[in-house]
Structure formats: C-alpha cells, structure tokens
Image (cartoon, rainbow, N blue to C red; front, top):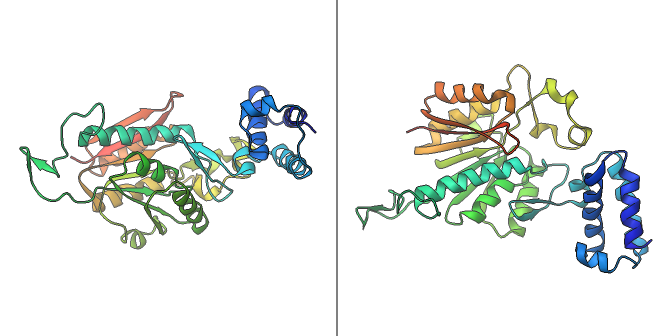
Length: 309
C-alpha cells in the first residue's frame, strides 16, 4: 500500500464517521504519526509503500477511528499553545477555547508586571517602590486546579517562566500524564494529588496569586446530546457534574480563593456556556468585586475572571 493509497483508504473508511475536510485532516494526522514524515515529504514520496508493520498499524487505527475514538487518543498526541502534548483516555483532549484562557492570563500577567507589550506599569509593586528596591521579591505562584494533561500549567510555565507553578488533580493516572508532559516540555511544576472537593485536602496547597481551572462543568442531563467521541472515550470524571449542583467545583474554587488567594489576586475559570450568569453571581456573593465574563471565538460565554480588590 503506497502513501497515496493509504491516504485514500483512511478517508474512504472513516467517511461515515467523519465528513469532508475533517476526514482528510484526520488522514494526514494519522499518516504523519505512522510514517514520521511531514506532509510535504509524504507528497514527494506518495508512491512509496508502507512497511508491513506500518500497514498493520494503519488498519488497527482505522478500526479505532470507525468506533468514534478520537484521533488524539489513537496517535496519543495533541497540540496546545504551540506545543505537542501526550494524551490518552485518562485525560481530556485540550481544546482551542482553553488556549484563550491561557492567553488571557498571560496578557494580564504581563500587563501587571511590565513584561508585555501592553504593560500598564513598569514594575510589579511587590518588587519595586519609587524606583528603589522595596524588598526581595517573593515567588509569584499560580495554581491550576484539575490539571489533567497539564496543558494549562505547562503552557503558563512556558510563557511565564518566572512564576512558581502548582497543579493538582484527583486522578493519579492524569497526574502521570501531566508529569510526563512536564518532563518532555522541560517545565518545573509541582504536581499534587488531591481531591479538591475535600476542604481538608486542599488546605495543603499554598497561597497563590492566580487560580486557574477548567473544571468539570457539564450537567449529567446534557450527556445524551453530546458526541460519542466525547462521551464514550474522554474521562467522565473530568467532564460531568451532578444536575442538582452544577457549580460544585466553582463553590470550592471560590472558597479556596477566599482563603489562599493573595491580595489583589485573580481567579480564571472556564465555564459551561449556559452558566455564565450563575458563576458571576457566585463570585460576587462570595466577595469578589471585579468580575468579567468573556466569550470565546465562537461567541459563547466561556471564561470568567474574578478579582477581589
């Protein structure tokens, strides 16, 4: 089977599951994974043949794709914030809207500390006063709650190398993936195993300047309307919350923030598009007086930033 034949076979065999350009994009991702050649080289070598082992892997992968398994799990990789992450069934597949969450934090941080293009003051007040050194700067800390693959924590640490990055998750399997990604992408992060819903367990976490989270937020009742590639393969523990308490994680995050957030610190959370106003009201009722609800590139309510000034 030539490279060109393989491409056509993938598209033909998965066209009932994936349509049009999506099937073509998946074919290219799978071929790059199997052959280790980029697209331009595969085009040049289109008449070359797959090895027996490569052809066997191709057929096995097509079967998995036909069963609605996401291509990211089939090839065990996903790109996020310009970096390649290892992913498997123990972690959510990173989404583009989560990149928007990361970029918002980075932009705000650089503006506040005078390190970005849109900086609104020269120095962080913890570092300087009237041009003279005030005191030795303390380590600025960010905590990622429910880190999963580690994509948020690793992206933030890569873009803001001066910070001290912490991340926690209830799943040991997810933390293994996050640590693997942290090592592969050369980022020093404190990964902590704990159940964030347990008030006693989360007390072991430090005081921080920023809390970020993409927590489980889809009510169980909405599961039936979601695609099979999500409901049958991605970890339910990272997706769904009880119908009776869809804000369960946000309650814990804001309570933790009231106890562990440094003065002037902020919380950034990804949200379910139908719960924007409820999340805003929760933060407001818990003492946060500067709250912004931001839409993603699809025009959906997606991120809330809350600051207690």
